[in-house]
View (cartoon, rainbow, N blue to C red):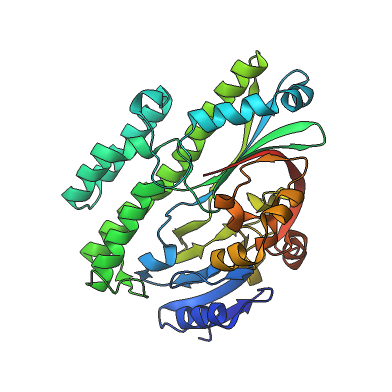
Length: 379
């Protein structure tokens, strides 16, 4: 049976295409697609969808298990006007209350009781499945404190607007805990402490395969919970500053780094948004251009997927060499954000044109709303 391979990438370089081909050429891959935002990643390119039979590949899910997006509509009396007049207070309080950046974790006392209860349920569910006792002890002792934290790189918190609606959009994953779980099973799959960042498949019927699936499912649920916890804390901050009880509507909370079982096949998405017919998603552009709320069209030629963002046009190193602080600051005029030499590699110019990316996948997703940023936080 001939494999179905689809390439929708925009200006993908040779290394991205080489990574993609190396992945889809494996015997256990039945179909693959490259999304418009595709760029070089670790092992599998970012923006790849790889569907396998009987094998799961930890390195194709990657280090940030469950990385994804949440979008919450916030409703209140004259909230748009109140937000605009309290921008600095909101920015400073979120920066103070939410641990931002690589390595920053939470205090258990700061985490909401409902998240603590849900974490206990996740831990109990994990314990019932195949697992390494050392991993269980790690999760039991350390994982709670990573909840409600953002991380660094392209992860962000954003308060934005559509017309006069206010929206909270967050991009984050399973944090340091997810990274440790991923690295552990990449090493287990490769049987090497140093040469594990390659394609090493795990048979889903093997003990390691069963353990990884249990770890993966924990990580995916944990990432959803992490984004929810941040949303709870930000709503608390807004209620305190705006001095009113706010109503919220969870529009979507979705992972775009995962491997999920559907009809006997494992769909690995490395930075790709699920887009089955009617399925909601969020596709962010950059710090300046905001995020798109979308609904999937169920296009089988896109493997029911879309991009997870605009995709990088410059590597982090290139961005720091080619983009000036002056042009970064100018591009962010009118938006309160984490604009510093530290976040220069996240400047809007480091990314592909989000409008071109969205146009390239109009047969996969329909745009519902374009959320424009008021405040953007990065780690």
